[in-house]
Every structure is written in C-alpha cells, then in structure tokens.
Image (cartoon, rainbow, N blue to C red; front, side, top):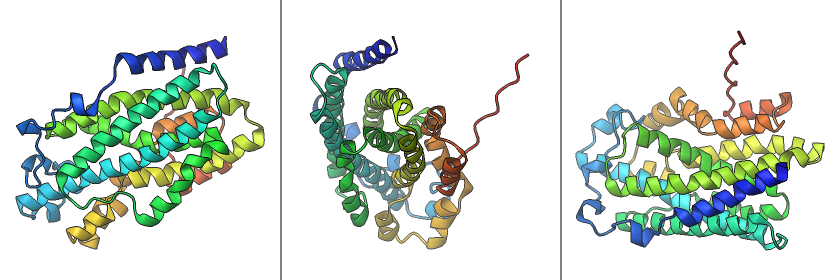
Length: 313
C-alpha cells in the first residue's frame, strides 16, 4: 500500500507537469514595453523593508544607483539559480540513467529536467537584458560545485538533500516577497510566479523521495546523511541569500554596511534559518536529528527549536 501511495504521488506530479507548464518564450511577453529592463528603472529600487533597502547608506545614493543595485541583486540571484539548476539537471539525468524500465520516477525526472531547462533559459534571458556583468557563483565555488552531478552515483538521498538545499531557500524568499507585495517590475514578478509554481512540484518530489528512501537506509548511512545534510543546507542557503561580492565591489558598499545588513544582522541570520525550516523539519521527521547531528545544525547557524506542541485538553 505504501509503495502504491508513493507511486500515485509521482504519477500526479507527472500529470501536473503536462497539464500546467510554461514556455519561457511563449508565456513571458519579453518585448512588452512595460516589461523592458532598464538599469535606471525605479521599479528595481529595494523597498524600505529590505535590510539593505532601508539602510541610510542605500537611501543616500542617487535614484539611478539605487535602481541599479536592486537590479544587480535580482540578476545575480537568477544567475546563481540557473547555475544551480544546471548542476541539478545533470545530476537528475545521472540518476535517471540507471533507473530500471517501468519506474515512475523516470518520467517525472525528465519532466523536471525539461522544466529546469526552461527556468535556465528565462533566467539567462533576464540576465542578458540587464547588460550587467553578472557572474553568479564565485569561481572557486563554481569549480567545486562540478562534483554535484556525480553525487547520485554515490547516494541519491544525499543528492536530493542538495536539491532541497538549493530550492527551498529561494522558494521561501520568493513566496515571502510576493506575499508582501515587494515586487514592482512585472517581468520579475512573472518569472518568479512561474518558478514558484513549477518548483513546488520539484520540491514535493524530493521530499516524497526522501520520505520513502531514508527510513530504509542502513543506520550508519542515515547517521552520516544526518551529519552531512546541515553542512550542505547551511552552505547552500548562504549562497542563495547572501549579497554577491561582485555587487559589493562594483558599488563600493562599505564594510560596515555589509556587517549592518548581512554578516552581523540578527534578522539576516533568522532569514537563513527560516529558509531551511521545512527541510530541517523533514530531517527531524526522518530520524536525522540526534544530539550530535543537532550540534552540526547549530554550528552551521541553521538550527531552530521546533515549536512547542499544544497540550492536549
């Protein structure tokens, strides 16, 4: 029964990919005048509720500079997103390569790979239209990341932890910014809504896969996965949510401002913890949160005690 329920979920996700999907060069009106990307467009300015947007240093900059900083940050997030999804697609295909005939995962993995390909195209198209020198991941990190597509050959469970490490933080932030009405440019909003809708399926697949596979792992492998997972999640969340060094250098953002806004800001630390909360809860659910493993979560700065359960009346 459990196997049938799991396979039914995979089949529903595959059907959803057929019934509701987007084509980046059909469903996004790139050439609509209102969707044009201009570096001095005030719609790119960071809102006051943003940690950098509300800082006196940022507010003191000329409007064109404030707009360009906001655009740079959005474009960098998209560039890092497409680089991550490039690694993800290669890993998914390595995983699918060894799947036996008749497995429902094969079809869904190919749906996901196609959707991630579309995301990469729309992200790169956006970056191209900014005409900014956006690089994405730092060079050494990008080089190290090339091992990622080979992880499924060692551990598919570890690979899908990596998947959640890249997808959950961005999904958390995008949903929050849309809910709070912080997005002003229609092109960014359209791309974000497409990404959220399709990533919801990708995240669901990864979670269901882990729920099925992790409890069946030998105890020593599950213990090791529980040690490695917070390291991956902590690194990935910071890659996805921290300010790009290229932006800091390009606009000569003072070191003290970076400390005030990011590195020494309790709210920034809380955002990073919150961005992995669903994966942290999943790891606890799967028995990967003993005292030693919890210590690693704390060292990585992404542990938060679960909410207290209400006493039964």
